[in-house]
Amino acid sequence: MSIDTSLPADSVGVVAARSAHFAAPLTLKSGAVLPGFDLMYETYGELNAARSNAVLVCPALSGHHHAAGVRADDPSNVGWWDNLIGPGKPLDTRKFFVVGVNNLGGCHGSSGPISANPETGRPWGADFPLVTVEDWVAAQSRLADLLGIDAWAAIIGGSLGGMQAMAWAIECPTRVRHAVVIASAPKLTAQNIAFNDVARQAIITDPDFHGGHYYEHGTLPRRGLRLARMLGHITYQSDDLMAEKFGRRLRAGGRKFSYEVEFEVESYLRYQGDKFAASFDANTYLLATRALDYFDPAGNAGGDLTAAFAPVRADFLVVSFSTDWRFAPSRSREIVDALMRNRRNVSYAEVESSAGHDSFLLDDPHYHALLRAYFDNITV
Amino acid sequence: MNAPDIRMDYDVIASWVGEGARVLDLGCGDGALLRHLKDRRGASGYGVEIDVERVIAGLKNGVNVLQIDLEEGLYDFEDQSFDLVIISNALQTLHRTEKLLREMLRVGREAVVSFPNFAYWKHRVAIMDGHMPVSDRLPYQWYDTPNVRFFTIADFEQLCGKLGIAVRERLVLDDAGQPVTDDPNFLGSFALYRLG
Image (cartoon, rainbow over all chains, first blue to last red; front, side, top):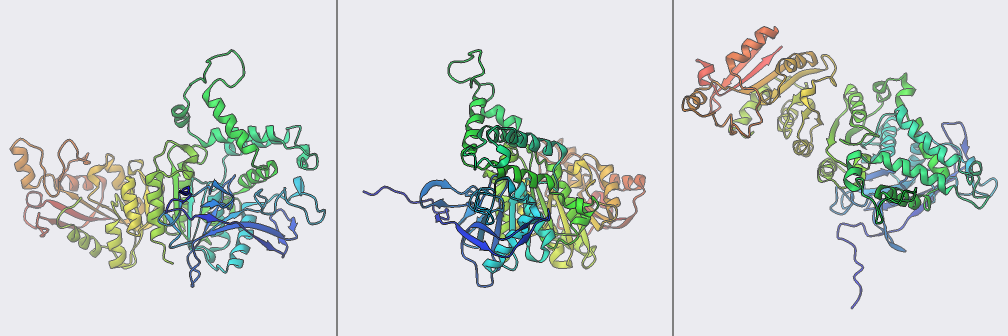
């Protein structure tokens, strides 16, 4: 009798990551020039003959190219948006050719702080230039060129991923037919930037950070990255959800009159922090939070989001979640209003969910039904 | 709301919509009216709906739907940004009637309002018999109705007068979907108005 290792019928199955090298220099918004770069990506489904069924999945802060399916060497490593992508799922790979990407500056194989600087042969570390959401779009557009995709049927992303979808629609209006922007915002609030700065300070002030050149010192700023993630994690959840999940429950042993882990919520946060610090690069975290801070298309248009969206030709679906206080529904409404003022096709849903910002990664039935209905109507 | 002659309502509204008009449909349900206006008149625009199941149905119908609570008002929408603002069989489900009517004509050059006539003779008979009316046009029991405002053709026209809203056209239908001309507040079960 053989052990059943089969995957669910609606899984894209075992997937292999690919790397693409782009030799032409890329001038970034900061003015810095990358001499060339690599991007890691995965694809699911088949590109049709008309090349009209491609969907780009833009990663959020800690996301990467492994969006669906499992890795051959590690069947437990399921893609971060696997509940959305697959045969028969809302983003149906029988219809669409779906592309996941690890962004520039990432730490999962694309050029970034942990990859080698071609000039020195050593890791870039803190010398890797700061990149913006628009730079990511420029890099992703080279991947589209490579794959022979003139126009994406859709670009979808949550949070920071939603910002990439918006930036695509502004920067490359003829290359995106539909933009699906989930739990996102047209720019961060002061409070949001403040959270990001505390996270960065936790990393930068870690004695093991060494100005971002910790690889050379054989250390990792684990404590700082762990704190940054713990803080982030609190803000991605709602007060209600944490009350429901943990309340004031104490671990076995009750109060010890110490600063050890006593409350369940402390245990959970430390676990999440440790897990993240063991698998993510601190320089990438710094860089990606800065990309979030800088994203402000209206800022390039005199503060007028309607003017910023003037070039947009894509149809939009915008989704927010009722308890998401980090990217609140009112922020999504700003996106919707600016699109309406440009007479674009836009639909908007505010999904009731107790899970806060993280809702966009979950499979709430209404949320997924909305996405399914929208994707089903996209012609390919 | 599955009134038997709903297509008739849609056709009347379609006849009031200019070719290629930009419309806003408040309480758009599953988007069937917007779809109808898109197919028949080449209209474009948005539906507004509070219920997520209906938002999903609207997306399936291929129309733009915005999940917004109309009780908030229409602050998202700019002055005179639509040719027509429609509220089809939904005004009776909203509390802030006066505000909404004013807002509709701020946002749209014209407005279309349709609603069930509470003073329809069968409804009067039900009340005379001691019960709240249940009919094709008021298909709910008193304890599960989404309706929160109960008004008649006469009441509505009085309110339009008070708000200085001109009635451009009116069509009153009976239960069979036939136009009613005599004593519409008694013989008509459903009324459609073009306002502006």
